[in-house]
Length: 325
Ligand SMILES: Cc1cc2nc3c(=O)[nH]c(=O)nc-3n(C[C@H](O)[C@H](O)[C@H](O)COP(=O)(O)OP(=O)(O)OC[C@H]3O[C@@H](n4cnc5c(N)ncnc54)[C@H](O)[C@@H]3O)c2cc1C
Image 1 (cartoon, protein in one colour):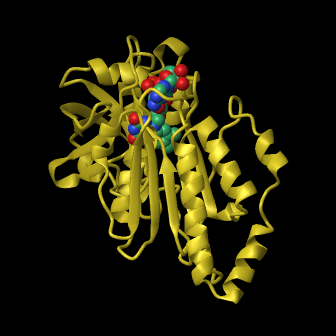
Image 2: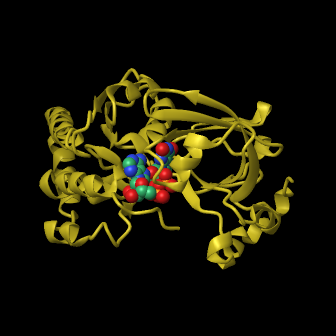
């Protein structure tokens, strides 16, 4: 069912079928979906987010697909026991010619709808995906990586849930980008899914049963300090003064600490100012478990004085909490 160009919306629903499961590493499985309309799935790269709607007994996915433009209202209005659970993921690859897409999912046990589905669904299983519509002529939204054109360096950090987005970001960054990528994964073997980049140092550490974020925090502290020091050594006096002025706009420690990640969504995504001329010493993109990301953001903004407009941070999930939509 292809919508005509005149009425195309940025996002639409796609009915898909699971055609391949590829084990990528100890905790990651690549799910390849095929669908008649997947030639209309826009290929934007970066951290393009999508929604997977999982079929449960009694749920009426077909009626949502028929609603198309107004599917979200229709979804919300369904009785609780008929509403298909929805979870957020990153689109890892789009192959319009073969009408296929890939989604890389970390299987964290059988405690969640998505991970239980991913662990048990046989080939041929169907579900519905909300993704960017290639018939829509404009920015789709759902991308949170906005590198300022004047950024001297980039710091990308996250946990396993951010790994697919980080892989896409590495693939899309220009060859002259400089900085580093830091990822904490359950098992060091999960690093296999990351590509290389000539200007980026990529470091992946295995959690190996340690506490979540315990390995990532010191890595980010160390490398943020190193990248800032490198920039300082290179920057002119004028650029350093501009950076200091920008840092003055930072939020206070109190404001950062006040955020309760168990109740509030941890999400702040500054848009890149394409007309800006002042050098941005470091642009940071942080995504993963909300408690860990909150601590990292606090370090960069409050302790290192990085301009908050140069830090994108996203709580992708929260310990002990089911995803809310
Ligand atoms: C923009 C965005 C992009 C994302 N991209 C990806 C992606 O590409 N691949 C991917 O695997 N995940 C990704 N995630 C994370 C994913 O949406 C969450 O992990 C989600 O909660 C999984 O749903 P579930 O049904 O398995 O668990 P839920 O039903 O939401 O939660 C059940 C329990 O599992 C816990 N839990 C949830 N996720 C994890 C985890 N990873 N490890 C350990 N415990 C967990 C919860 O705290 C809760 O206690 C993304 C999230 C966002 C917001």
